[in-house]
Image (cartoon, rainbow, N blue to C red):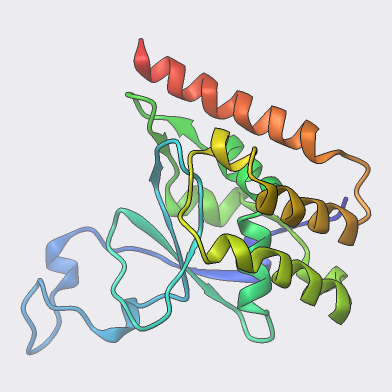
Length: 192
C-alpha cells in the first residue's frame, strides 16, 4: 500500500486566531478577505460521524474546521472520495486524540505534518472514475455514525471499490472492525 503525505496532495490554509493579527487596513478585526475560503473542510472535533466535506461555493471556514485546498493537478473529487473512504477515515481517527466527552480533536498543524491519504496518482482514469462513481451515492445522502456507516451497502460498495482499485490485501470488514473499535474506545472513554 503506497501512502503519501497530505501536504503533497493538499495545501492546508492555516488559521490565525489572534484578533489583532486578523486586523487589516481599512477593515475591522471581524471582517475577512476571500482568501480564507477552502475547497474541502473537516471538523477538528469529530463526534461519532467522521467525514471531510466539499464546499460547493465560496464559504468562510472558521477555526472549528481545518481548511484543505488542493494543489494544482489534483482531482478534488477523487481526493474527497479517498479522504472519506474507510481507510481515509481510519487515518483521521488514528491521527487524533480524545478531548473529553468522546470528542475527537485534530488540529490543522497535526494534519499538515502527519496526515496520510492513498495516492490518487496511482489510479488510472478508469479506476479514478470507478472510485468517484462509487462515492457518489454517499454524497447524495446523510452521514451516519461510523458504526451505522460501516453497515450500509453503498458504503461497502464504495470501500470495496477503493480496495480493489489499489489492489490492497486487506478486507473491508477488517478495516471496519478496526475503525469502529477506535471510535468506540474514544466514545466510551468520553462516557466515563
